[in-house]
Image (cartoon, rainbow, N blue to C red; front, side):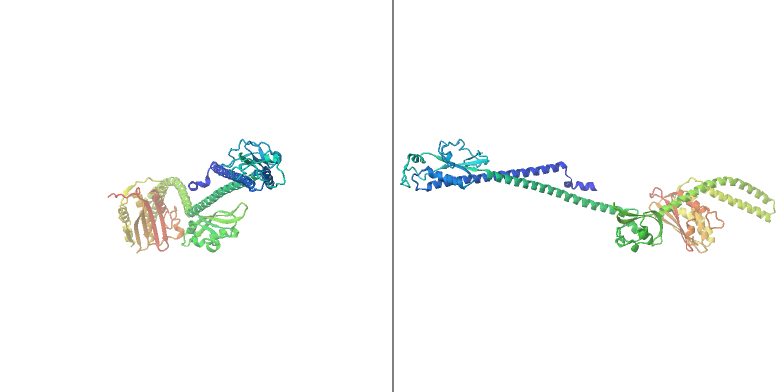
Length: 594
């Protein structure tokens, strides 16, 4: 049952390799998600830094064009001031430089680098931000990790070509040749290079990477926890259902046991009361459960749960009389249930009805006595019969020498009669002790019984006893040894006639029951008391002054040899009922012989 149930619930019993694969797949998904997220954050931060550089480039362009009061429109000194000021205001700006087409720095946030030639070989290379001109390279300064260089065109002139010289803003200062050379020319193209420190970006990325690692581990743990929770819940559900099935199976098993089971809990209340216990005690299960044994059970059962009977009891035979007067012999065993710490959990009483077993034991003992008696009788009979023949011969010879009717002749005749009676007893004893083969023939039971009643017809009329046959017309075939079965019936008929007074009734009936036929013989005689009815089939037990005590013993032996059984029921002063059960031939209905 458990295996079939687990086959329907495979989810909770997955292969370990499948579980490991699931965890690895979950970890891979989380890793890919974290890597993509970090890459996306890095890209956004780079774009933000790039846009900041472009904004600075636009600011410098716009600021340079704004000052219209300068002496020379393309004056480099003004741009130099803008660059130095802008670089000093923002710590992320490493340098700002304006270079010409040859790569010469015309303006630089570090004045010492004005005039240096910058590397512009990769000005047109696409950087981290697609569609924009920039580049990323390692910084010479150990305090900075990498530099994002934003390259943008520098246009200090708003409109088309203008004269090379203009009025100076401050006319009191003369214009030198050096100042005149430090101007932007309209015919050249200039670019502005803004180097931004990516240390903050990398710090942000590292922080975000750490957060993503922590988040990924947390998600992985949550996933593993969810999986384990699912397995635990599923296993718990299966365990509960398996426990319920086991409890149902155990309850069914206990209810169907051919033993009475009564169990109490630690508080002393009945918790288990199976069907067999109901049958024996005649108490309904619903009336017994949750009751204390002393308040509901008969005394022989309640005593097993008393405090004085707390020890273990095995094979205690108790005679119990049920409510319908039936005498039962019960074998009781009572044990206390304790856990591993010797804590008392309850008490169990097992009840076994051994009434039939005791009957079988007595039957076996009786048959053993019969076997021993038969062996002894066979030996005694051979030793006694020869002297009896001699005694009978001498008694006959002695009687012939006396006058007929004399006392001597009567004594001789009495001696002969006693010898003959003793010889008959020995013959009956031999017939009882020695098994004889049965000569079975098929009979019509109704005809056979009517013929057997003719043997006692004259005796019944003489005793004024009514013989009342109540026989079924049955087509079931019965095979018996007619001579020996007539001996059985005649013996029972004679006992019935002797037990009745004039005016009694002898009834013979038949009942067909499955594969057997019951022949029932009832009389209205004096009956047999309960003490004697258990002994009437014992050899040499008789209540008749002249009886041998072997008649009913031989009757039972013949019936058992036919594979049948015989039962006696009697009520004192009301009559006796004898039921002979005989098996039919193969249990099949056949047409009896005519």
